[in-house]
Length: 327
Image 1 (cartoon, rainbow, N blue to C red):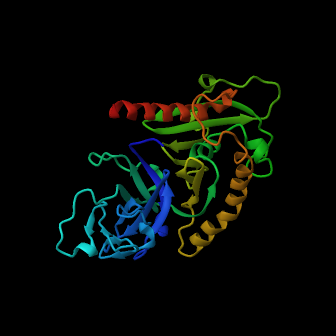
Image 2 (cartoon, rainbow, N blue to C red):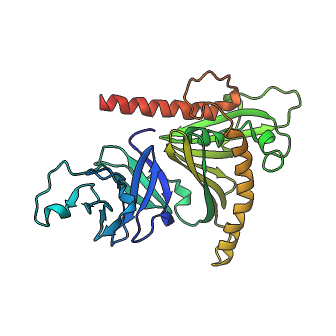
């Protein structure tokens, strides 16, 4: 996983008031909860005393109480009360577990995956989806590393084969470009697929007025959007569970219907078609080996794979950058 990044790890509705939620994210067992002011917190799900799961305990005055011996933890992961020692006992500094900075925004819980707790940047959500859109969606777990799941949505070559009965209709097998542009850690890629009549695919620098083409975006490290139109978007967050599993949150965003009730019906109905399309992908992606990708891995890539190559290069750059900062 790439350090010093905001990851969308849960939907807001999954963290309920007065209830602990234990999940694995970023290969770590974590417990999430809301305090009396509805703010979300996250600490490691393992008591520093005898190793019990904290998520099977309960919330006591904004603290997490271990179900084994009643140790109580605050949002920083420090033990604030050890019942066996009495209420007035001083607690040593080593009685603690690690904690993560988390924020709630745009219907997600975001986790700042870093040891850095100052100068934390803004959550990198797509600007146009921050207001004016409503959405409906679903989520599911895939048995692949999040890089595999994400790269599937960067793949502009597979459409007429994997989705030939849905979004890949039209037999547009020939891939021109694609054109890839970066703005900080936001990748926009422009697609110009067409039927093959024996012509040579255009190279990225040969495509004129590429800005007018159909395009998609990927915001590092783990969110993606398909820009169907100004009023319709398909969004996905690829929440890393561990090295072998990813939880995918897929949403249909729209702004063309705003009538209460009706917009919820339209958003909910989108789940049917989006699940069909996503499962067409899943059938193939779950067969890919290895289940985790990296920049160089013995593949024979083609010109149309440029968004995937760029994604891998950016991941490697960010990982190397973090290693240099830590050294």
